[in-house]
Image 1: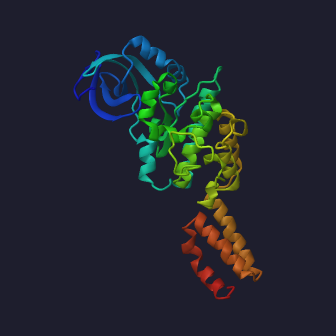
Image 2: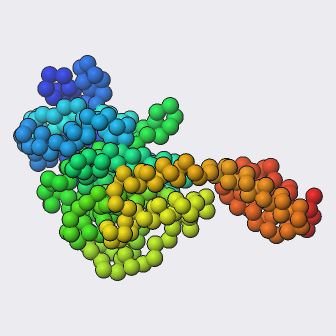
Image 3: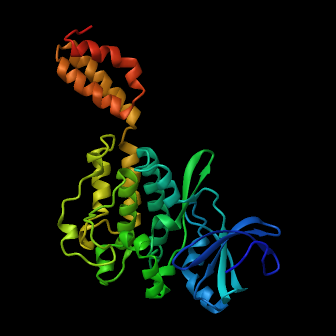
Length: 338
C-alpha cells in the first residue's frame, strides 16, 4: 500500500515494509523528531473516526505505560494505492515477533527463556484484565507479540489490543492458520469471549514455546470445532523437558482447561500464580546442585545405582556439571565408591 520514501502527514517518512497480517500492513517509519516508529495501515478502515474507534482500548492501555504493552503514539488516515486508509503509529521494537523468536529456537525455546515470555505475557495482560471493565485482547498469537532486549534481558510487548473485536470475519479467516490455533474452545464454538479466553491463548503460546508442540493437536482443521480434540489427555511440559517442575506444569495446564469454568480465570490470577512460583522455586542450577549432593550421599551409603540416577538427573538440569562429575559416575557404574 505504501512505498519507501512516501510521506505520511508532516513528520513521518516510510522507511520499509516490515510485514502484513490479518488487519493490514506494518511499516517502519521515521518521525522527523522522535526517530523510528512502527506504523500499521489497516486494510478496511478508511476514516479517522473508524481508526479512533478501533484503537479506543489500545489507547487506554497505552496510558498505563506497562513495560509489556506496546505504546501507541498517534492515529490518522493516509492515501495509499488502494485508497484512503486508517493508520496508527506505535513504538518500534527492533527484535521482531515472537513467531520469529520461536522459529530461531525450533523446536522449543530454552526453558528459562520460555518461562520469561509466559510471565511477561501474563503481566501485560493482567494490566488489561484488571481494568473495570476488563480489557480483552481477543487475538493473542505469536505474530502480535513483539520482543527485544533490555540490558541483555528479553522483554516482550503485546500489540493489537482489541482489534479482533471489530474485525470482518472474512479478514479473520484470511489468517486462520495463524490465529485459530490460539483460540479457546468456547471462541471456536462462538460461545463468547472472556478473560479466560485470553488466558487460553497465553497457555497455547507457553506450551508451544516449552515443548515445540501445539496442545491438543490431533491433525484436524484448526478452524473448525472438533468434539473429540479436547478429550485427549494433555501431556504436561515436563514430559518433554524434565527441567520443568511439577508446579509450573500445574500452572500451565490450568490455562489449557477446555472448559472456561475449569480454567485460570484471568491473567491477573495467572500472573499472581507465576509470581508465587518464581518466589519459591529453585533455579535449574540450584536443583542440579541439590541432586548432585544427594548422589554423593547415596554413593557414600553404597547405593550406587541410585547415585547414578540422581547425577544423571542433575546433568539434565545443568549440563556443565558433567565435566565436574563424569569420573565419579563412571566409577559408580563400575561399582567403585571413591
